[in-house]
Length: 187
Ligand code: HEC
Image: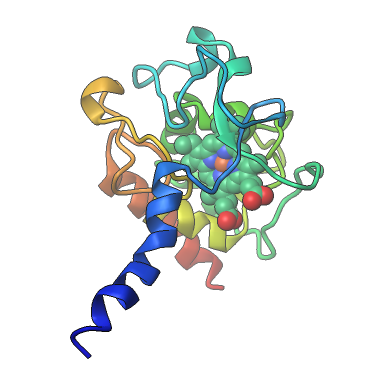
């Protein structure tokens, strides 16, 4: 048992280690084009600007990196099956949307972006959170969904991504907001 343990542990850890280094994952820019090695000047996924400012007012989205996908994106549509008008009155709906707009995620996860159908911060069919299914809501609340370089709050205008999947200046507030929506949907 004791001799088998290290190998077993390594087998469990290896995929996580490789993913954490970006070893086995392909990387794309926001136009969806895949690179083996990112061009100089590429902007790390999860880079944010000051709270209250928009990422695309400060940077061009062209050089933003993120994951690739095999299939082209579909048209964003509401993924909410029980639209309760109360969700539009959530006191943190606009705050959370502004947090997303401050970060590079918004370059791809926007209605005109490569991953709009996964979630879109500027989805216009109701609440912006309607653009994502409940599993993705949980992912934004629970753990970083993309691996790779994670900037520290000190180098990212106070935005952190070590506690929630979406970068935020206030993980507790963001998590509470997303969890309210998960609870409201009840699925
Ligand atoms: C360069 C474009 C790009 C950027 C920037 C980007 N994403 Fe994504 N995201 C994608 C693509 C493409 C997928 C789908 C990946 C796939 O098909 O496997 C995806 C998938 C996701 C998913 C769904 C994962 C799943 O397994 O269902 C979440 C959640 C997500 N992104 C959150 C984020 C967050 C948070 C940020 C910012 C820190 C971000 N994304 C930045 C392109 C991007």
